[in-house]
Length: 370
Figure: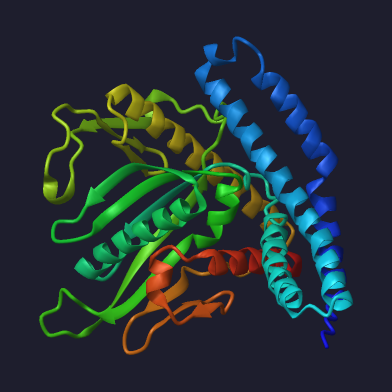
């Protein structure tokens, strides 16, 4: 006798989903799609390639968001029908299918709920991620390279577009630093919880004595501003150096001085770019990233002043946010959220969703607490 009673779980999902729909504002979403569809249909849209790409990309993102909402709504309705069928027909196969669909919906709605927490000023923007090797010598450079691969694999698994903008290779192995862009809905809001110092503990493959080695790498995440007119940088405040792009081990991959390094003299911020084919393109890309960093720095300083004036002192996240332990045991643990897994290889292969979701929820809770 099949007695499938999951009505309470379905009711909880419907309540959560109703809250999500309210936050997303489906009516506004449909209005945005209608407006963007009209803009995308203008005959001379592609006369301005940059604007055309922005309109079509935004339209695609909005359509995907609406499709995700409507698909979950339909699945909830279908689940209730499936439960009714299982009980009325005493059908064990339908009951098993319903339990599986319930678990799938709990996961999908949980993921969608996390995206509703990405409502800060820059959360919807593309992200520029920079990884830098820290203390630990060759192991740190290798670790930085492992993190670069991890994030690129994560983006690939989600179908997100990535562009590696600059890579500085270490002499023996790994990288000194790398900068890449992730273009996806809420890319900055999603990846910003990855910013901080990451620690690796393992038996070093570069140590002949086979001793356990601890190494560090820093991850910086900034939003890539769509409009950077707010920040005007005088030419006198910048030092621009050009050089040849190079590959691992110093191998030349470019016979002309097309790579560009811009140093902002007042702040010491340095941005390098070598992804594009021409010096002009690399300079424009580097300038855009520099403007984004300066604008974000300005906003952070303003926010810090406001907190100081209000007399509120809040603890920062701290530098070290996550430990990747490969010896003497296997574990990856986030030190802020306590989220942990015992399969480091899966994490290095891009399985980051659990850590990112936990980080976003933790940040939202920390914000309320403060």
